[in-house]
Amino acid sequence: MYQQKYDVIVAGGGTAGIAAALSSSRAKAKVLLIEKNSYVGGTAASGLPFIDFFNRDGRQIVAGIAEELMKQLFREKAALKHIRTSGGHLNSVTMIDPEWLKIIAEEMLLESGCDILYHSFVCGAKVENDTLSSITVANKNGLTKFQADCFIDTTGDGDLAKFSGARYHQGRERDGLCQAMSLLFKLGDVDVERTTALFSENPVVACPVGGDHEYNLHISGKLSKWNDIVKKDEIFPHPDHNIWAGTMRQNELTYVNTVRVSEKNGADAYELSEAEIEGRAQLKKVIYFLNKYVPGLEKAHITSIPNGIGVRETRRIDGEYVLTGKDVIEGRKFEDRIARNGYCIDIHDPKGQGWGISRIQSQDQSYDIPYRCIVPVRIDNLLVAGRCISTTSEALASTRIMPSCMALGQAAGIAAALSANKKIAPRKLNVEEIQNILKKSGALI
Ligand SMILES: Cc1cc2nc3c(=O)[nH]c(=O)nc-3n(C[C@H](O)[C@H](O)[C@H](O)COP(=O)(O)OP(=O)(O)OC[C@H]3O[C@@H](n4cnc5c(N)ncnc54)[C@H](O)[C@@H]3O)c2cc1C
Image (cartoon, rainbow, N blue to C red):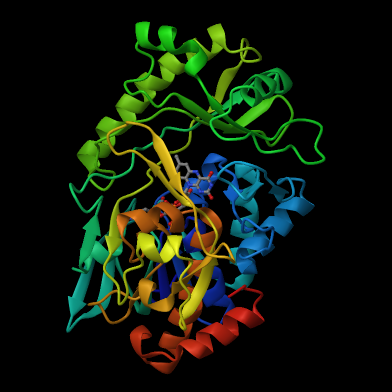
């Protein structure tokens, strides 16, 4: 079934990788998706909500494959509908069941004719004359080489681009530090009503509405009520005692986001290992604390921890254009747009000193992401999509949300298929052609 040579190889099967492989395969390319885990989904498989399919005014700005995936999940009752939120930093929340996401996304990929290779880590690349000629994959079979006409790096960390010698930046401009990481977890046996009622009185930002659901869907609360205890028992090593959580089903918190690990490099195996260990040690204290003090969580127990700590920021591959924080805030528009986003700049301080947002100021409450942000400056047959695109650290704090990663993946997939088919480097493609295909396939640009 598997081939040694493909039209397009996609490295990494998170939100961006799913959309990239699917759109490339639907554009008639023979595609291999390579994923180090045993499932697709990446960070989305930790149960986080897809935020901001909508802008602040309630206009949908991301659709395409991302919306298609949500519709399939709605059908399986494995996602709640898009819930518009009020008052806080979010414009909309779409809660999903992460286990169903793995099943449905895999089905969609297989139906498109894409090959999926799990348990395989892309660990090397051979570049000749600025062209990626083969990549090396490590798995149970040892080391294997694969070739393709065009490659897409959707590893989140830009691993393939880095192995190819592409230029990149990491962390904030002044000291190279990245946003804090968070070890997420899922809780069972939760009295959701009591817990959400408590946090509605104690919000970080206004608590999003529960829509027409009988219980509140999303918590965004402060733990400051228990400041003395938190300090005495050294629960958190930082002053950012917020809790973000969401519920997809009765009696569970599908994800809880409160553990923070800072000043570690998520693209370094040694520091990442230290972060996992620190995250789990913090989680143990947090669980004892939640059980003891937070109403509704007395009996709550961990039902799962994702396959890896949540990494918000690592490498950003230098592209033909670098999207800036100013572009985001001013809602800048570009002729070569391939995606739109309405999410604020959302920064979890790299030193664990808190959390802050900056809102988009333009009238239409959204900005464009240009095609040039997914085209690395050096390697000719490589595209990037998702978290590792070409931005400043500030702009990444907005572009990194999942609907936007999927929109970028969809565009990269189309561009890679065109490049493989026409034997033209991605940077030389006619962007209007990509935009037309995107529009025909339901993307909003
Ligand atoms: C704690 C936290 C909370 C967040 N909250 C939200 C939220 O509420 N809503 C929202 O929309 N976004 C949220 N985000 C942001 C969002 O989840 C991520 O930015 C987004 O999912 C990144 O998608 P991606 O496809 O670029 O990367 P990933 O989801 O990281 O996918 C990368 C994939 O590549 C695989 N991979 C990596 N390296 C290799 C390799 N060398 N070889 C093979 N496979 C590889 C990984 O296993 C993974 O499957 C949050 C992020 C974090 C960390």
